[in-house]
Image 1 (tube, rainbow, N blue to C red):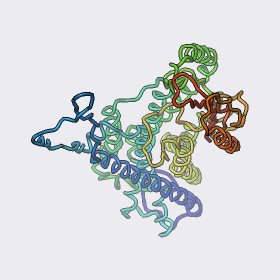
Image 2: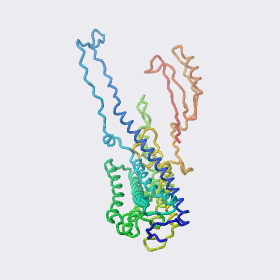
Image 3: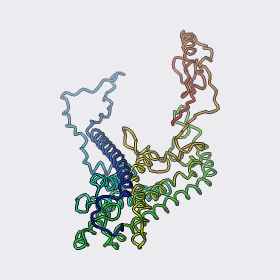
Image 4: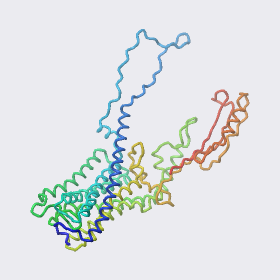
Length: 482
């Protein structure tokens, strides 16, 4: 059976009865998984928007003001009014509109790209899910409206998915390599242009061919399922597969460039980061006496001092283009080979259809696992950070391929001591014994996550202390996050 055959095929040959079953099955899995994550993110957007709205409505606490008083013979007497002053009508904060909240507190850009990619994957999965209709009828009926719908969803779903995967690649390059985030208006304008381009090419095909008038229709049987009529080979190439191949090549090149950049940067970052951390620690290691400030409080300095992990050299980063190419290239290559005059068997198209029908659920698994800090951020919306720290596998220990382990230690060389070393008290205060008992009772308070390092000291008279009591507590805190 040639791909150029546009007539109804009934009954289905065994190759299609057996081959369309996995295509429809994986299309169903992709449709359900993409739709679930799409509705989940929609729900989170509504919740986060309501939280932002309630924050706008919440009354702000009035600033405390000191009462005015006058000094009369050494006594402070508050000023009294013969007539109480008129209270000014307080105006609450103005409620921001949706566009104002979008401008002031925009959602995470990568999360919005995933949201749009899921919408594209839903359409793509729906196209291959419709093969259930042909299996149920045991015929591929070109007069059935399902045939036209399937051709439309393939045209829009395949192209939209490729366009947004390319957009994600560019956005990842800007965030990881350049440390740059697009302005909000440019970002949403680009998203709108992607959808206009996707639907514009599909609508343009309908307009140019007058919906296939004179050739049996625009969307008819094209081998194993319905798609663009074989009589319009030029439209197949210029309005669809040309852009698919451009996205395939472009996305692969961008991710390889990111991976090479991380490889080169990881080799040369150790010395620079160590020197930066040392110089900054020298500048900030002398806090003001009595100040509770930490030794290092500047987050910028922490970022400068942080060394790129060795996991950046792990080829897991190349998983994004590999999955995209693996799912999209077989069908695109089969169509191009068929357009070139080669005979491609229907069994190959069923295999290629199974691969591209799996793109939806693979995207859900891939982005939900590697960017879960953004996709599943919890009750609060994710921050605007889209850099290398948001990739789960980039922060993994060297012995693990996946995972995230962060350990913060204040004094790794400290030893655990009990709170039982008290300095003798010269002036009799009368509570020393009780405090000693209290200290010895607290000596058992040490856990696996927080450790008391030094002891309470200097119980006695000291400069600047009140009632001759001074307690010094040095604490070593170890925080492990995984």
